Length: 107
Image (cartoon, rainbow, N blue to C red; front, side, top):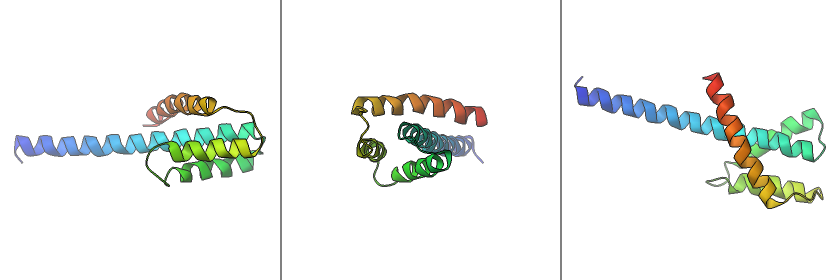
């Protein structure tokens, strides 16, 4: 294999690895967000885990974070909770950092 081919292969492998890590971090953030929201709504542990899975699945509806935000914010509002859009978005930002730390400690 030539040096250029080896570098291309290494770059492709790194890109694939980074993409996989990014996917895991976002999925973990969504799970953590679901658990946070479930706590706000007073769910039991079993219901909270189920809800967190629903939040993770919500991310596959459209590109970006808006689908996850809309699910969580809508569910909180439907429960009559007075939590602002800003608070939910801020929680998402905080939890992405926590998710990164958790995933990087697992790798």
